[in-house]
Amino acid sequence: DSFPVSLKEADAQTQEQVERNRSSHVSKSCSVSYANSGALQMQRGEGSRLFDINGIGYLDTRNNVAHVGHSHPKVAQAVAFQVQLLNTNTRYLHPNSSLLAKKLADLLPSPLEVVFFVNSGSEANDLALRLARAYKCSQSADERLKKQHVISVDHAYHGHTLAVLDVSPYKHHQGDEMTCPGHVKIVSCPDLYRGEHSLPINANNDTDDALVEDAASKYAAHVEAACDEITSSGNSVSAFIIEGGMSVAGVILPPKSYLKTCIEAVHTSGGLYIADEVQTGFGRLGKCMWAFQHSMGGNDSDICPDIVTVGKPFGNGMPLAAVITTRQIASSFESLGVEYFNTFGGNPVCCAAGLAMLDVLSSEGLQNNALTVGSYLQQRFCQLQSRQELIGDIRGCGLFLGIELVKDKITKEPATVETSFICSILKEKYHVLTSVDGFHENVIVIKPPMCFSKADAEEFVSCFEKVLVEDLPAASERLAQ
Ligand code: PMP
Image (cartoon, rainbow, N blue to C red; front, side):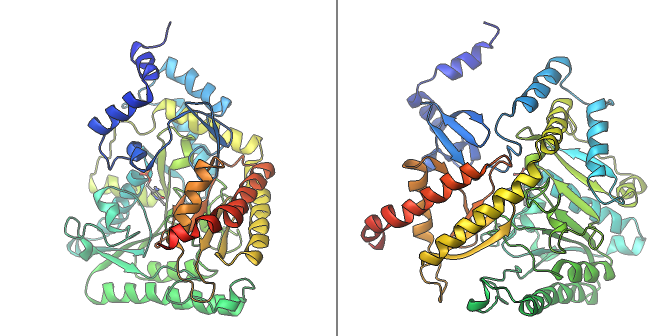
C-alpha cells in the first residue's frame, strides 16, 4: 500500500499499453526505446540474469553496468537506506561523497587524487576535455590564443554530448557539420586483426612479440605525427583521449608499448593523456584494476594518465560517474576563475551505490573471478574456433572479450549478417543476451556482470555452438538471399 500510485499504474499496464505509450511518446532514438528492434520488457535482475515480465530468465553476457550483479542485495540495501535519509546534494558536504572520493583516489596511482563527481560517462569525458583545455590555457596568455586540439582514435566512442561526439568516430565521422572537427585529429585505431598495420594472418593465434612491437610503433607513429602536425602549425595539443581497451571499436586492446610511446609524444608536445575507463574500469580486465595498466602487463608504474574518467559500473546501475585528476590540473579551473557546478553529481544515493559496489567487488573477489572465468571463456571459444570457420579472432582479457566473426578466415570478410542472426537466435531461442560492436558490427563483445560464473560461461559457449552447428546451417539459405 505504501507503493506510489503511478508505480502501481506502471506495473499494471498490459504489454500493448506499454508499447503504445512508448511508440507515441518516447523518441525512437532514445535508448529506452529499443523496442524498435524487438526489445524485451525486463522486470527483475539477479546476478548475471535478467527476468522478463513473463518470468523468463535471460543470461546476460553484455551488461557492464550491473558490475557486481543485477540488483545486488547489498547495493540495493545501501541505496534504500540512503534514499530514505537524504537524496539531494546541492552544495553541502556529505560523508558518502567524501569517502567515495577517497576510495576512488586510493585505487589509482597517487598523483591522481582529486575527484569531480558527474552523472554519466559522456559528462565525465566532456569535463575531462574541458579540464585539459583549462590546464593549457592556465599556463600562459599565449596558450589562450592558440587552437587547442584533441587527438582521438578511429572507431572510438567516448559519449554523446556535443564535445565528445567530436572525438567519437565510432561508426562514421558523424555530425561533422554540427561539431568542430577542425580541433580534433583522428588517428588510426591500433587494431592488430583488421587495422592498417594488422598482423599477418598466421600470426594472429600465435602472437609474435617482434611483430606486435613493430605494429605498436607503426600505430604510435600516427600519434607522433599528429602531435607534430598540430604544433608545427602553431596550435596546441591539449589532450590525447583513449580507452585502455576499446569497447565499441570491438574490444581492441592497444598493443604493448603503444600507449607508452603515444603518451611520451603527447607529453612532449605539452598535451595531457585522458584514460577513458568508463567501460573497462574497476577490474573488468581481471589482471588489473584499470585497462590503462593492461598493455604494460598490469604494471602501473609505467603508465600514469593525467586524467581518468569512470562511469557505467561505478554505481552498479545508478547514475554515477567521475573524473579523477591531479591537484595541479584540477586547480587550473580555480586559477582561471571557473566555477564548476552540476546539480546531481555526487548525489548521496548514487555515492551509496558506489560505496556498496566497491565493497562487493572486493569482498566477493570479483576481479579475480573475471580473470578465471574470462580465461575459461577464451579457452572454450578457442576450441570452438578450431572447428568453426566463422570465428576469425578471439581477443581481450578477463571479462572483456571480443569474438570477431568472418565469412572467411583468410580474406576476413566481416560476417555482419550472420552475427546479427546469431545474436537474435541466442536471445529468442536460448535466452542469452549478447552485444554486437565493432566498425563492421561483426564483433560479439562479452562484458557480463563480474559475478559471471564458470557455469554461466559454459552455458553461453554451448548455446553459441548450437547456433553455429544447428541453427545457422538451417537458416543459411535464407541468409544468402
Ligand atoms: N566512454 C565509453 C568508452 C563508453 O563506452 C561510453 C558509453 N558506451 C561512454 C563513454 C559514455 O557513457 P554514457 O553513456 O554514460 O554517457
